[in-house]
Length: 156
Image (cartoon, one colour):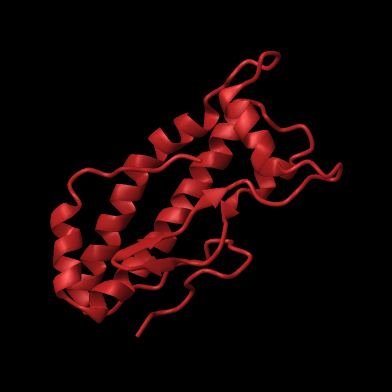
């Protein structure tokens, strides 16, 4: 849905690129950790906006797949996944609740979640990078809840 921009990370990205494979490994772990923060922010925002009817949409929020590397970019999308018991796509519900329709007032809950996640993500990325520089090892991060699995162990 939304794309998160974080300021001040250009130098970090350039440094990681210069580090070669080690930089790529820590980048994947950082993206997985960022996804966890974003997922939490989405769920918190949905709850704050009282978007829980059955809970299916909120519980489905998570990464759409594993951390992926495409050329020099490492990413993982976060969204509402799957369908509810009536067959309605949770991503569709999330979109309509965020942007509204002619009959449904927009809540902008995803926009708010992304804004709230920004500082949390940056803090987490700086923490992981600091651990990496201090120890020389890629830190372990918890599973991001992806159906395809997250990074749950040290990447070598």
